[in-house]
Image (cartoon, rainbow, N blue to C red; front, side, top):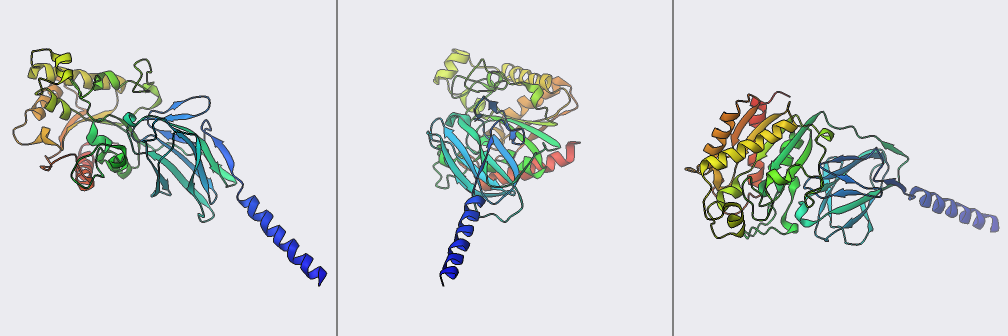
Amino acid sequence: MIKFRLSIVSFALVVFLNACQAQQFNLLKSSDKRIHYTGRVALTDTAAVLSWTGNSATISFNGTSAKAILKDETGENNFNVIIDNKVTDVIHPDKEQKEYTLASNLKPGKHTLQLFKRTEWAMGKTWFYGFKLDGDKVYTTPPKKRKIEFFGNSITCGYAVEDSTGQDRGTAQFENGYISYAAITARHFDAEYYCTAKSGIGITISWFPLVMPEMYDRLDATNPNSKWDFNKYIPDLVVINLLQNDSWLTLNTQHPEYKKRFGDKAPTPEFIISAYRDFVKSVRSKYPKAQIICALGNMDATKTGSPWPGYIEKAVASLNDKAIYMHFFPYKNTSGHPNPKEQQVMADDLIRFIDEKVKW
């Protein structure tokens, strides 16, 4: 009987030790080359700084569980957890450095895990220190063959896309760049996705003291001395969807930014056309071989009678560049920013246009 009891105890101990062993996590630091980042990500000695909409960290591994070590600047940012191409959770990092469980009880075998930043840089930075994995094998994640970059505003950021009340609220909980037309389009073509965007930004004027020609070349959007190395990511396709905010603010003569940018004299169509042309030329100078789509919409800048599509047409015509196309999204004719359905309609429209015009 004593021997029998000892056998039971021994068996239980072995099971317990095996269970403990199975739950041991190995740290994969943010600097590990097997982690694949997308978007403009600043790498420090201890962390990767995720700030832009669509910044992501991806890893492929054998195992059943995974965690991430994160700290948020403001406590406002949100991240999609994507396992094997399916969104499984949303995490909301705290202002203190903590571990977050991303996956548990996965089927044994190889899995792909991605953290995707839903929120834009106005919500602050998130420091990603690394993954903790329980698996015995980590794989290098190669970059995708196709590459797209979007320069845009709130529509591209997915501003208020999840506010189903009609209040069009722009706080972090209602923003989701993962379901913007831009991110949907990139996933459709299985393309790398870079999103250089900010809600409220324009070419000639914004709702704040920064316009896209001043922001587009930054690594840290909040720091004018932080410059992005354009050689790190060379897109095959660039989509520019700007001027919606210009269309509002060039009429708002009492706005502080109007007075700062224009004084008492309204900008002329020639000024707007020239500013747009100069920005597209700047993008072309960074990406001489990329195909570029100058887009607009789907808010009221493309409604019937709007002069803004015409400004883009004149700017593009003056560039005489056969690899620059134009595409105007139909006016959605509803209040507020585009909802998920309207973002999907935009994506479908853009995908059709790319299939027709772009040679990958």
